[in-house]
Image 1: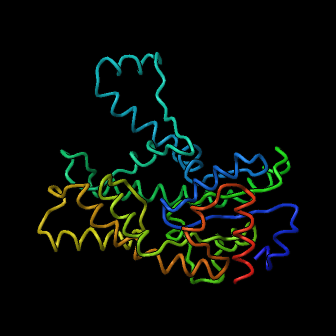
Image 2: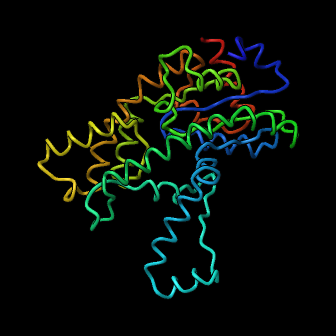
Image 3: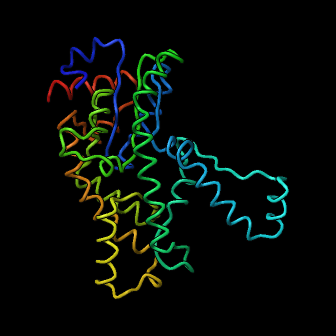
Length: 285
């Protein structure tokens, strides 16, 4: 770890952290809070994915749909209009909409092969965005003069690294760049995340082996076929399994960093609060 003790953390002229854990437990909230403090640079992995590495895929998909409307087709073909996504740190809808959900196309689903292609695109984009972390940490300081750096990772980070491999190159790069901080939820948080997802199921990235198995198991248990599966029903069914799948992977990553409880993150109101929570976690490690 780049900070082994609370004293090293408190005395550091430059503090660099990477937050990871399930979406919805406060990574982006606390990253926004740190950015607003004025001394922290906020590097959002999902924003980087959606703008730098998948922006063209997202825009082309929107253009494909627009080309089906004669009025818009004519404007596009004459370069009279521009179509692009408006991704922000707090609105990643263009990215999640592009990823989509597999199932009945009449209900907005994607054919499974197309869905898997987009999943593969996301994996490559996420690896690239995470690999950019050291460059952005240096850029934040050298170009903009920010002394501190927070990497706000996506919930699927544990799917694109091998937490059990001590020589995993991407995880090693991240560990050398920033202090890895797991925001850990308890059973109550998990139940709330599932309830929230059930109300508004969203596209996600999954490991291909996990997803292929889930797709086959769902059909076997329900008797549905790929053409009749309700996309929302499938991702609801898959979500709770994904949470359980990811927990041991997060825990393995946390052995290379520190763990902070989600309730502690929820109580943070300032950068000073955050810095103290990290110091206490280092002391308890």
